[in-house]
Image (tube, rainbow, N blue to C red):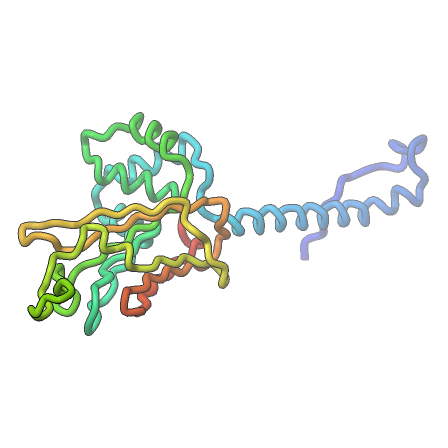
Length: 244
C-alpha cells in the first residue's frame, strides 16, 4: 500500500522555528490540509451541480452553441430533442401537441439552426446580448374534431334560430392555463405571448410563448402543465440538472 505523501523536512531546517514535537505533527497537519481541500472541492462540485445549465453564457459558450446549431446533423437533433416533448393525441378536446423548454444555451443552438447558413456567429453573440437570459417555454395547441376552429354561438336574445357556429378568435389560447413549477412551487412567467397558426387548410391552432426569470430556477425537475378550457391537464417534465 502506498504511503501518504507529505512534505519532506529535516529537524535542523526548522530548529529555530519549530520544536521537535511540532515537526513530528507535520504528517497530521498535512492530512488535515488535505481534508479541508477535499471539503472545498466537494462544495464547489455541489455548487456547480446545483445550477448545471450555463448562465450567463460566455462568448466561448455562445460560439460553441452557434456551431452546434449550424451542423444540422444527428448530433444537433439529439441535443435539441432533450428540450422538446411531443405529446399523444387525446381522445377528445384540443391537442397540446408539443411543449418545449429552452435554456439560454439551447436558445442559441435553436436560433442558429433556424437561421441556417445566412446566420453568422456575430449575429448569435448580438442576439444573446439583446434577448437576455431567460427560460423560454413554447406550447403548441392544435384543433381536433372535438375542438375545432369553429365554436358554437348562441343566437341573439329573442332570435328563434337555433345555435349557430362562428370561427374561434385568434387569441382563443387565453382560455387555457399555463403552469410551471419546481418542487411544488409555481413560477409565474414574466411575459406571455401567442399567435395563431395557419397552414394550407386554414386556421389550425396557436403557439404560445412564455418567458421566465432564470434566477427563479434551481437545477431540478421542472413541470409544465397546460390546462384546457374543459379542465384537462396536459403535463411535460424536464430535468434541468441534465440540460445545459
